[in-house]
Length: 319
Image 1 (cartoon, rainbow, N blue to C red):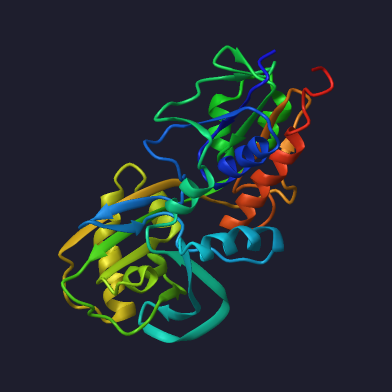
Image 2: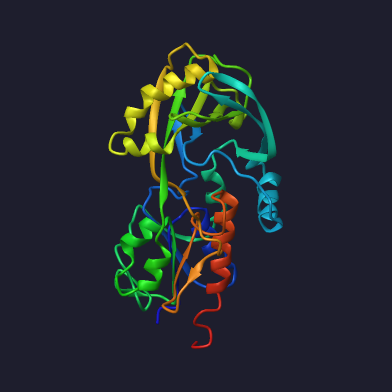
């Protein structure tokens, strides 16, 4: 048997899983279909500056994740952003809401995944076609295989001969389209972000200049999942209603100098598993955003970390 482990998915959960395996002295390879790792902690470069177009920020509630965050803070990869967001509705801003500290980055959230992945063997811009019992990926056997991705994507690669894994991958996911609007100047009130209530168009607005720390006049608006689902085949169709809603919520009358829409077909699990991960007798494991409670970066990291720990001892008795 190949004594390597194989992780499919280069987001935070997949890299966390691989990091644990590598630190335990196990050989591991991470394969991701993107040109760069990061998953939904994705970044797009616009006018020579990074913009987070997937996840907006991260929070910390668990000491195990706090240790990782402290390391990012020490080397200035991450920084505290804000604990207070405004609350708005289609007619305007109606107040503020204070919550946990939200952390952001100067280089984009993807930079944190790239830091976590330092030293790992990566195969990028390459998809896995089929995972079968053995376990094997595309006909090559491994000691263990981890699928760190949304359940519907796992179903696309799991063979019918893995019924338990396929059952664990079932579940509903909401889409989201992010609209990145760049303006000539900051033509909105002083704020960090806005939770938008009672809108069929918007759910959240991030001031990317405040988030990044350079005060660039850039907003990232997250479209309502129903609106996003209606235009999955044409994400640019949400731009016009999003800009109109920004006018109502923030009082913006100026037109943006550029606007881009980024579609996420599988943005958020509707009913995430309470368990940290799944690991079947086949040696195929599942982890990620659909596991371990509420959808957030911390939960995905802890899910991948837990699966990595569970897999680290696999095959050792036989060896």
